[in-house]
Amino acid sequence: MTRTLKRLRSCPSLLFGPLTTANATKPGQPDEGVEVVLTPPKDTQDAHATKKLKLLEKHATESPYPLFIRPTAEETRVVYALLAAHTPGGVPALHSEPKDASDAGNSTSESAPRTGSSALPNVLDSVIGTILSQNTSSQNYTRAKSCLDVVFGTGEAAFGRMANAEVGEIAHAIKSGGLANKKANTIQTLLKSVKAKHGKYDLQHLHTNEIPNGDAMRELVSYKGVGPKTAACVLSFCLGRQAFAVDTHVFRLTRMLGWVPEDANPVEAQAHLELRIPSEFKYGLHVMMVKHGRTCRGCRHEGKGSCPLKAVAFGEEYVERGTVAAQFHSIWSYGTMGFTCCGRR
Image (cartoon, one colour):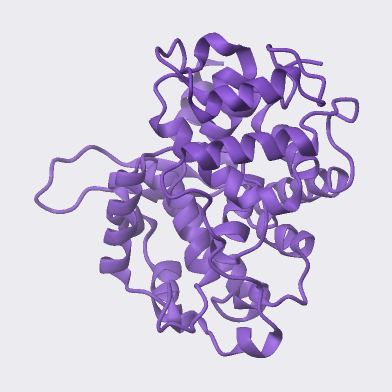
């Protein structure tokens, strides 16, 4: 038994299939050792993609919490207006709308991430950027993405260089963003999958309005390492479509507001909120919630001070008198919606 365990430890491929090793160190730097990135067998990857697509299809028309009827359209409108009144700059504008096929055809991967005033953002570059932004700060993400672009360049030629590079080269370029080896493996697998599916490193066809949001979402989540949150971010920030991504801040705030069950998880919360929140509020509400979650000290865990959303959820003791939040609390508590001061029916 001991001999078998030693053999498995010395050769993990016996358990997980072929390995990809990524050494993030360079000559002249302290050797921190080789981090081993385990790449599951292809049939395991295919099964995982199939599971993601089945869940996506299942929740396309039915919430994972079908008996949970919050938020209502009116609740969403009130919180949207409240955040707009408290967010510097107000409601963010959706930067673009889906284009017709002829417009999308004028923008190729060579324009990554964007060239000229009329060029469309590069979709594949946006997916890579969103992967890099996972589990890190915006500052670390910016450094990692900038370094990646410096090392490999931008556009389809750069995607080809990344796809054919050693994983460790990508990991070294993006190490400031954290989880470098895992993200490098995900990026390279994504690029190879896109090339295998479309014959080039290009997802610009997703800009066309001939492709519904659901189809665009399905294609994105079919790639390994791309989940519903990443896909929703790409739909909103790159494709100019209305989608509601649930990140850490959004999840915390929607739970505080009672918009999802207390035992909800982020993936199911996003599926629920995608159906419950009116389309015209999705992008703006996401952006304003993220900004609020990052900057408001009052609504953090055991946070001190006033918070307009806490006022809505818990009561007027969180409201500064004479502010916009005070007016909204009055509407929320005693208006026609029928909510009490704790935000419950």
